Image (cartoon, rainbow, N blue to C red; front, side, top):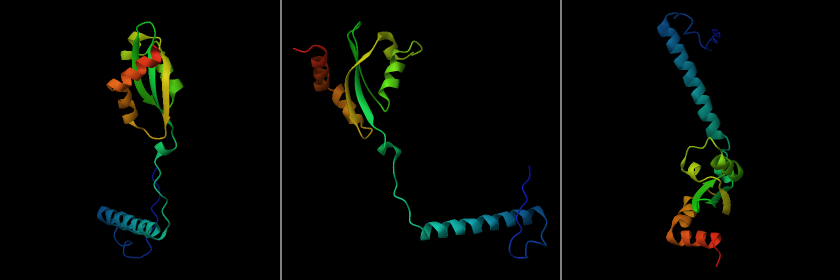
Length: 136
């Protein structure tokens, strides 16, 4: 489907019907619309930049497999769906070998922070996880 091209405001393009004239006319129309957009953005009040991660809560979690005595540390924005995917039969990742998993620790944060996850993977973090599994 070919859309009709709106004729330009001035008469100089009416005489030129070649493909070069069409390209020139399209380029002029594009330039006019870009100028209008730049005027709009220059004169309008711009919204502040908002990241989508501002509204999403992230959860750092620790999973534990009672059958194999294994732990897994991860983070997600939807813990119930993530736990379901870890325990799902079609899962072909590392966690598939040690099913079933249960959540033994979770911490909610407003930002996607890998540092929280790294804290749990350090020697102190592993000690903390063991204290959750085997309380003294």
